[in-house]
Length: 409
Image (cartoon, rainbow, N blue to C red; front, side):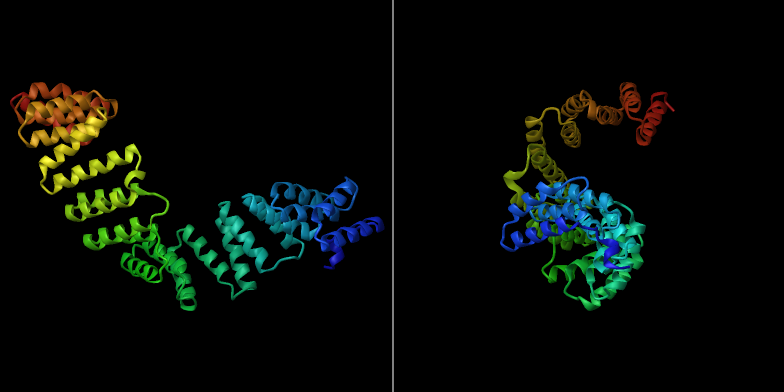
């Protein structure tokens, strides 16, 4: 295919205009050049004028306006390869990935395919959700530019997104052999190992990422999650603490969830250390809801560690701040029940039952306490109401058991 097949025709007058524009640009006068082009632009003028205007606007980062000009150019000259390519570039800048992919496909159709075009097409397809097309384009880009790591890494990501974890891990391994200092590759392979449930290998990779100085909040939090899963709570806590120290986005919720998991695993000491790190890292940046969640976390830690008085003090503080916090009311009621203070416990459960979000649990806990006191007839209506509001298996089991006991069976 000759150059003339993919370039628009221009008249002699237009050639003279383009020569004048070239001189203005050489003299660093882009605004005058743009003005001259605008003065001659029209529906019947060459697509080259629209294309050149688009280029000047693109250089000024006026991508919306540039896209309009490139679209004018390809509308006038359907085979204008350079205009299609530049239209693909500006559509990518605008986040219009599906449109960018179509523009690059037209470049390929017109014989202008190269590694960059296929690579950008692959990225655009991937960003717009067409993973099969992205994979095919990344493979073509890799064939045309075999030494360029970007395209093979893009292919590995696409395989990962398709949940083809073994293929993604294997490709990452090949790339790591050539680029052993790439933290990004080690991390991507770690994520693939997690997908394959090979958590030991994933942890090894994440440790390498940290040694390379490329660890992030997410990579360290993932490492902590793996160690928790393996019951290595001290190692997990250290990883979470390092994650919190690196958090630049302000994500206390994930760290608090991790501390909650440690409490649930009876690792109270480690959970307390992480809670302290969370408070130190985020401090006053926590909003009211997050501060309350941290207080609840401390209450659970205190309960797990046997510090019932400390737990009660924290819960009383939460309820004082927010009398409609049903979860805190129920936890406080459970504390009083364990302390053999049934009247105080029932008071808190009744408060929780008066709040829509916590009513089913408040009723259930109240009924459960009454049942332990042998007050089956009083417990039955509470259980029936709790089950009506939110049907659950454990509530139904207690209801049936209390019904039998109330009938002397």
